[in-house]
Length: 197
Image (cartoon, rainbow, N blue to C red; front, side, top):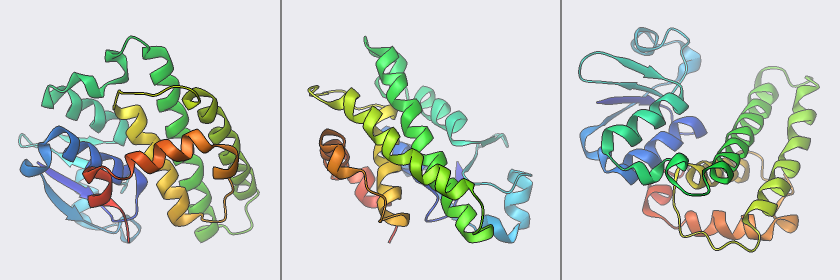
């Protein structure tokens, strides 16, 4: 398999993390591209010129990290990585959705700052992040989760991305349980190996 990605994309990083967690990284080649330059190789794989893209051996191109995540979990046979495999599936899906929202809002604000610095969306999305952290804090508070699934990995990638690209965003002081969970997950080899520099 080939994974088209760039170094800083939180969506692509989540797939890299999942590849390591499933053990499929050893059969996947990383192809680093700059989607903003519209490289022909990426456009052939994904006409939207977005990363990540997972190119399968049969020529199928999987785009969007949610689709790729589902494929990797099923293909690896590691169903425990799916939030749906747990007794508290509804709560796990809630965490996954909030983690995805944190990625979307933080990435969106970074892109707006780069290409439309006067956009009112920037402040709207930045104001959303502490609220998302507060909702996750309630879900993590008082619960010592022994599960590790896509929900937790998504949250870890999201809030490490916020720390990387939006370090002035205040959320840790009001979300100590979430901060502890992100810090603990950040020590996993999959997160350490894929952390952007």
